[in-house]
Image (cartoon, rainbow, N blue to C red; front, side, top):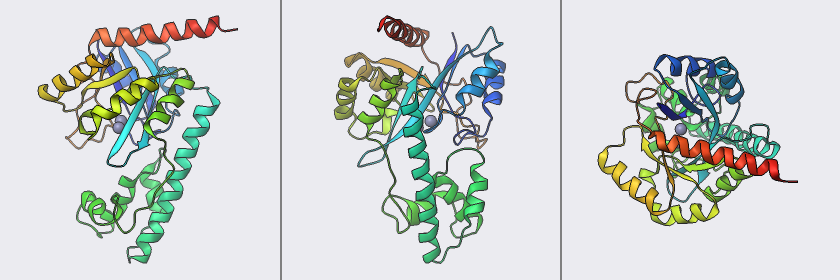
Length: 283
Ligand SMILES: [Zn+2]
Ligand SMILES: [Zn+2]
């Protein structure tokens, strides 16, 4: 079984439409994919529709929620979510609205610093997805205010930058609970860079975390071994995915380029069907 459980579409910051992601998945011979856009489930229904006639490809409805921690970012993946869940949709909408408002405030701050970028241009860069800081960085780069998108973060829009603005975010534990409430299976995404991983994992496990993304992007053997040990210690399913966005920059791993153990995929499916059976039994 070949699976890629971490894919982005134009519903967030990916470059391919959900339908195109499905076609590509078939072309590269995948059996299972998960659509995991940032703070949105808008890509799920089109992807499910595109794959509905396929005998060979299964699409897992998913999401990737960006959460707030003191240092860096923690992302929580949710698999097999009920994409009709109202609370999930409303919370994700609030997260996206706050991103847009934040982006507008940051553009105003940049204006006061003498860097004029248009909201319209930033919106164009987004296409259908969510406004993110990389879009603002790209707009600054286009106008020649910075030599690279990284410079935009380092000098202006990074955490301590003069044009940085806070936004509404969930704590990692809150994202885990939100996913559980929507019948989903929460998994900690790309955990290698999380500084206090040893403290975070038991906390999230207690809240209901079921998996750890052990196989990811460019992770090498050493990282994978360390993460696999953590997954084993806390009885978490070691999942895998590329985080493919179709950026076309030659830096990212191609779709299907990360080996996810078939056993892990089977475990997730078993958990999901157990959960739906439990729901059926509820009065
Ligand atoms: Zn992520
Ligand atoms: Zn991602």
